[in-house]
Image 1 (cartoon, one colour):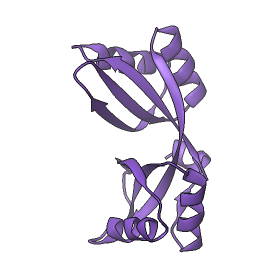
Image 2 (cartoon, rainbow, N blue to C red):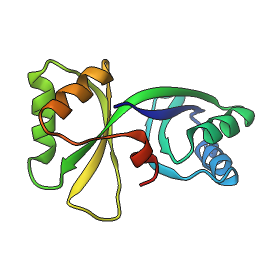
Image 3 (cartoon, rainbow, N blue to C red):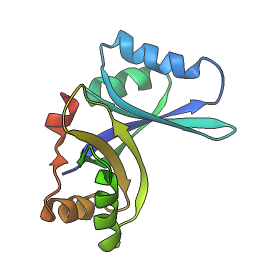
Image 4 (cartoon, rainbow, N blue to C red):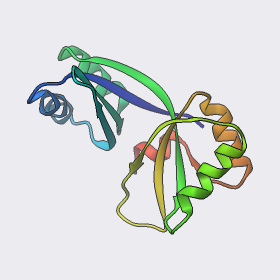
Length: 143
């Protein structure tokens, strides 16, 4: 169960992040989750949005470089050790986590984490087979 994330490459200069979020706001695209990583020259803004096609089109038209990446959204028990359980299952299956970030929900007994794996389909199978709730895109984009 893959989920589509968009990555936006940003020059590492003041105001560039605000430009990207302004483009999304003007296009009426809701941001559901995000992660920002940077180097001295550029940043990578990773986004889960309500409408990936509209977001990609608007950002590209505004001159941003945009890629789509397959990630996996996983429900994690919101208690001590909840994330450790998931990471232990992945480690036991020999799967590498490239990066991850949180998806904030208004309420609930679980948190949602977004994971990038070198093999997202294998990771989703391992987690699902071990009783972990992997969230499909249709549900995630509407949260």
